[in-house]
Image (cartoon, rainbow, N blue to C red; front, side, top):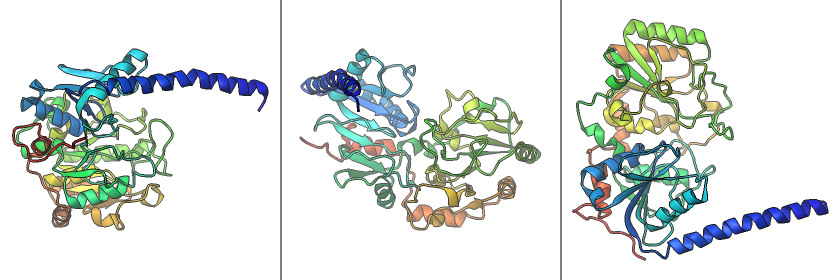
Length: 403
């Protein structure tokens, strides 16, 4: 390294040091302030998921008349009435100060996907969970913070797999509850589909939810297979045309929902009976309510299948990249956690669609056996259970962690 290079590095370090010192100073000062009745939330796409459902419950239960809601947003343009928003990635000192202030003085912190940093002992930090049970080992790619007080899981059986996947510390206490977003499964009469289809009616609707392989940031690809449309099994326009003809003949709509962190492929065909989620106006759609209107699910290594099992409807797993899928599974025999049609090729996909059309559900018994074995139950009271446990509602069954 030349003398000039050394000088440049020293100058860069000097410029960065005040920033780090400033951040540490700001955090220490804000932590001297008393905790306030703020509840911070975080979710995958802002205002959605388990955090979104829990927020709605707290609002309806009157808790947010006493507490003020703060949301850590990934999209700085996202807002919600009566909610304070702070950016996850601030672009100015003012935004940074705002985020740190609420992060340091909020009494409760609830997060689904990207952890909210706990700053002091008397704060209560709760992971509301991204899913009921992960197929994949996450720990090599992401760490579960041991400052988390409670991690929500539907059952002791499910938590063992979650703990293994994330390598969760014994310091974190499991909080057993059905997932907040699934409370709507106990309800009836939801009609979210009309918000997408208008007056158009279909005899059956199938949703396809592949997990992500290629991350939008370009730094991660979990499969060595190339997917021109971002979904397994379909590799050419002719396949899409044949699929659409089959769906049209059977009066079925196939709704394809790419994973929000996957690369969005723009060269998608315009088809009468195949709709792509990110091309639709779904801003007013409650996805979990919509899920109750789906007649069948196609997925792969996504935890959404364990949510959908609560609805007791057909599920198919696309497995054409099983041998080339990079992440390790959390269970020794992942196939035993996939009680349904296994789709390896295009013809398998067509066969599953025919089965759904005819009302055939040949894996129902195996699916329910797995659901019972995993302790997956739906009482429609996940939000209530969590709120009561933490003392946010009148019936306090748990206790907050002391200093």
